[in-house]
Length: 328
Image (cartoon, one colour):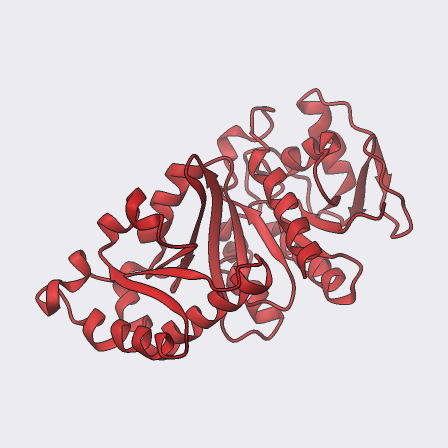
């Protein structure tokens, strides 16, 4: 059986990414993960955490071997010490992404799953970087992508997409224009159909202000921007509800009415998502010409090299990337 090959970028070398990738040596889920990393880094980290892993140099013709970890070697610029950031390796982190992206675009890989990166150290290396989502959008020439986090809960899957991503809170209202909101909803709707098999997705849309503006008394963005866009897209047949007050939108009776939530800004949506699914959640970039999933956590520098990092989110990111690749 030929399994979809998933490029797994190991992320910030001083963080927990390399050791999470090592745990994929015991992965028995869907897909064929291929680790993009410095091979010596992986070997050193495996020794540090007492993990016995057999490596194999990646070749597209390699059959799946669950007893060995396929590694596509990308060299570090400088030695990596767990927990100690080094801007000299900022370019290395981006090289991992570039190689995975090239492989996805060429068909060498069916999708990519990413371990966490550290935005600060990449910027310290002289590269403006706000996150995987924005970087991959720029590299693929995609004018707008939508960041969505998803995870399993006791009541079923929870999917939360964002209109804005990594912006200071003071800049959020101006960034939510009618055009941006409409494009975000169209991308979310289309990918819920194409990548998740939902024929008629039901999308719950949050308001921006407390109590969704309280009829304009607590802000007019709902009246001036959000409601006109929702009315327009409803007239085209989209199943949209809202704008909902964010403090009640995540209650079980409301969530039961939708397949996904669209939040206006980062912490409005992801605080609840991560509370409900942390360690099992994943990040999906919608609207790209490729499939990209990611873990739902950061580099955890203080934990790096301890062997205590939970690989559950990375396992789920690989599995979800595989499921989406198969469904397309």
